[in-house]
Length: 369
Image (cartoon, rainbow, N blue to C red; front, side, top):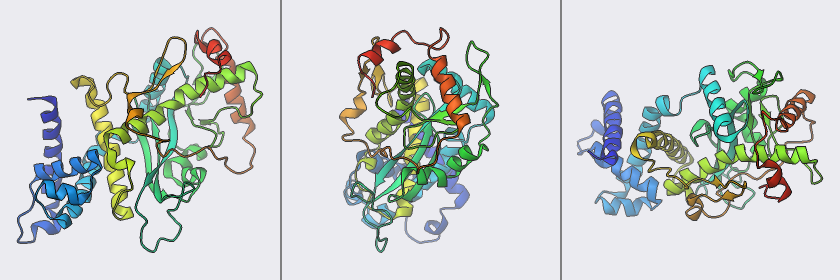
């Protein structure tokens, strides 16, 4: 049996168990013949992966358009319910520590528990919604705010915020964003930067749209930065690029995310969450099936001189991929303690334990993103 067949069988078994539990809800109480599990999954995966219309998918499978419109969100809900506990679980303290080890080993950023950013997912204008979903780009959208680990896998997601809301507002109003700012996320206690006696909290990396916080680092701002600040910004950008690539890989594989989703906001939210779960599911199974979902060079890679080789997903996903732009969060000054954390990491990047050989060359050549 091929790995494709094994993955499809695994998803079908999972849906079958969920459906047995729910007894098909209202569908089983009707006299109509229900669409089989395998076909329902195939229809949904075709819709998500191609981004074609529900009407076209219905014609391909000789089903009614209303039937397809009903079964897709049902299957998406089942996919999230079945996959989330194993493939998008809320990390434990030990898992946060493991994520940080991977970020240090792969991306050379210490005590980093994830990269964070937001993505606008376009939707058709909802009826009677006014300007709630109308964003600054002139389209209607819901926001996917997410964090990811060093392997482009999402660790925490918040889906469905109004497109008109600022990125900072979405972050602060999300459950995990509020917990990061309140210090209640369950991260490991502070540890020493590798090879030093300098203590530091565990942290996420984000762009200038996010607040500087003890557990959330953003780059130094301004144009006339010192060399050590520029080095920090390069190293920060290098780690933060992981979330951009995670969004890009997912959008290139699940092309429904690259066009306005034509359904209710509630169903669009189920669709996005299903794409997140499938992305993590297939990214993890890459380990055993030869990396078909995210093969080598599909994500951005770095040459020995520090130059970034754009990932192949960028040939599929055009534009800025709907990423939220860097807009500052109000006028409040960053906490002095958070500034100290960032300064300590900046200094660490100048030491033998924290420097990478090419960083000064990258900064001198102006290769920063």
